[in-house]
Amino acid sequence: MEYLCTDIYSDNVTNFVGVNIKLQALYKLFLSNEHTNQIYSALATDGIRWHFIPPRSPHFRGLSEASIKSIKTHLYRVLGTAHLTYDELNTILIRIEAVLNSRPLTPCSSDPADMTPLTPAHFLIGEPMCSLPEPDLSKVPDNRLKRLQRVTQLTQLHWQRWNQEYLS
Image 1 (cartoon, rainbow, N blue to C red):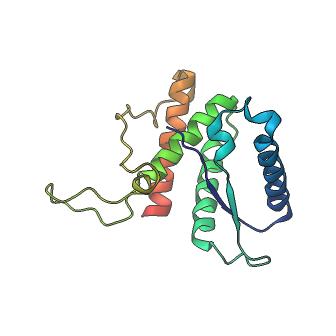
Image 2 (image 1 turned 135 degrees about the vertical axis):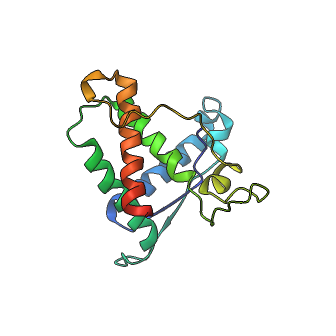
């Protein structure tokens, strides 16, 4: 389930500042009289606010940067030299995003009467993300898997590695 992005937080590097300027110009073009009838009203009325950290201050947003670094490191290790199509890589990244957004932010209780632990998904979509369990394909040789099973296997391998090295 995808949602409209309203705020972007990023480093204050020239690439992002330049993109912000281009997005603002595009936004003004969308709001012009000649284009308002051609563009869906939600796209023309909902703007994107871009928030930058102070220049030359990489220590800001350090926790989120550390998380991103960890995810990328494990993703590189798991994918290795896998040859994936754009759609396969996109599917893997969306599944990893769902895993990360469903991890508990608060301690988990063993009492079944307690409330479910708070997750990032609660803040993003207002409820926990749930999916059906899939068979474990992490130990099946690559040459025996179909393409979708390979995508599932890579997602499971990423989760296992991230769980062992980051969460433990």
